[in-house]
Image 1 (spheres, rainbow, N blue to C red):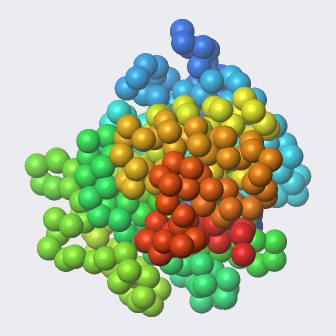
Image 2 (spheres, rainbow, N blue to C red):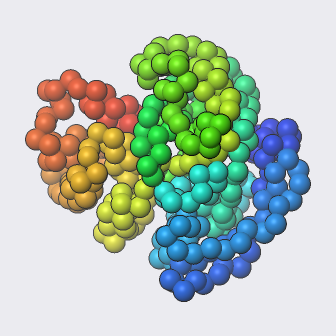
Length: 340
């Protein structure tokens, strides 16, 4: 990904700078490895992140097996002439403090953890990316569809979410896309707001109801302004991925075949379906995804075919003949992941 100009733009305004290489990994009592780094915010260095363990700090822990898989993937994708990250994986932190999010990032063959404390930095990065690339890249404009989901439940918190994905483009600037998949291979920024009492609240409490369909139909500039209004008082970030989905999908994919982008895309689809399927159905959904991918009857190279078959296996609904919103979500997800 040609993100060097993007990184430079972010750093130039002094909102976000990640300084320093990764520190030596720390082996915890649970066997997880933590790699603390130093983070710069507004140009001033912060103390080296303190390693933490346990259920309340899951998003700073990575098992050695998962780390090894990710590092192998990074080596396959890394180009020596570029300094930019080639693979980004977002992990679950449902019980971490709501004013922090952690990105576990592959960079130059090593794992780094980046913390952001204020949503302003992430939103400014989005604004700069759109300003710089939105009018210059036809592909970026075509893919820049903004989604604002209202009242999504995350760790017993209702919050409006927007994920920002900068996808890889061979020639030209990164394409800018929006979604709520939580998959690897992209940068993710999720936006949330808190009221004066410190409680999390969703966009729907602001008094301005804006549906997903409405946002898809309005010009990019107006969509950007809508997001800016939605996060005017935002002061925290949270990523919509949870451990239950990761345990049943990502781990099983890793056990059955090498970790690759298609597997991560299917993992992201499980996140996409989280609001559609009740929590009790998540293990069934994940198992079905794994079985479908491993079955000889479905071409693993066809993301859309895999997803449609998975839903048919789980619910008995043939989405090819049933024009429900879920079918459109599947088709859009497939298109965004390389399926025409």
